[in-house]
Amino acid sequence: MHQTNCATPIVDHEELDSTNSQAKRLVEGGRGGRFVVSAARQTAGRGRFRRAWHAPANNVAMTIAVPREAGWRDFQTLSLMTGLAIHDVLSGLIGERAAVRIKWPNDIVVDDAKISGTLIESDAQRIYAGIGINLAAEPEGVIYPTTSLARFCAVGRLALIGMVADSWLARFDRWTRDGFAPIAAAYTERIWRRTSTIGIALDEARTQRVEGVCLGVDPAGLLRIELPDGEVRVFSAGDVGA
Image (cartoon, rainbow, N blue to C red; front, side, top):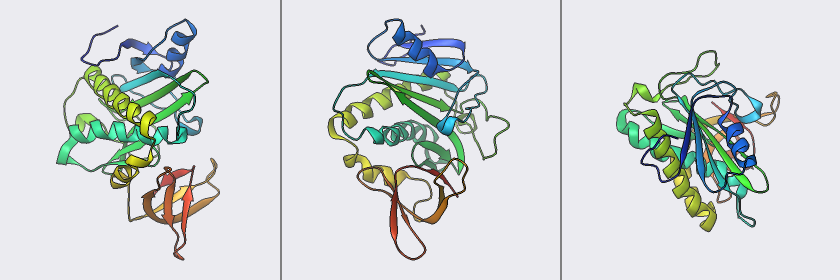
């Protein structure tokens, strides 16, 4: 275990298949409480829709594991809260050098290029927030624009992991107490392509697609899109693109 200024224990590895998988193995082995698993290299990371998460060495691959309490409100908005937590950190580091935005529900893009993705998994007892950030380099072999934090500033991998963990846990504690509604406006202010036309694919094959103007999210975290005829529709799931 490497020591950082993070208030939560970080179990760091040179290489793992998946930080989410390793966190689950630790829980199965009896580990409790809050902890973070990270790796300098991840060989079998995954993202939304079972997509592979490409992670060059020395980028950030981390999972925040926390107990899951019964009766939490707005559980479906945890992914949006996670996007806000990552945005807090990356926008603070990048500053005015580029526009940092949240692509609904939780990808982070910098000047329209993806820099971070999230996969949240859970069971009856635990939540596993898997977070990937392009720190040192952009992945190869992907079909969408990507960027890395190294283009904008210098920060150590473990230092960044600690910053993200602290940011996530602070927002998580407020979210478990108050829900998503109090931060919906802040999310909307940071959403990618607000007031611009976007498309949302409603199925994995991308055969069902809706286009309209992005209006942000409602208090329940649903994406609001104004269609060409003026109707405003809300979406609980989908893959957003330009």
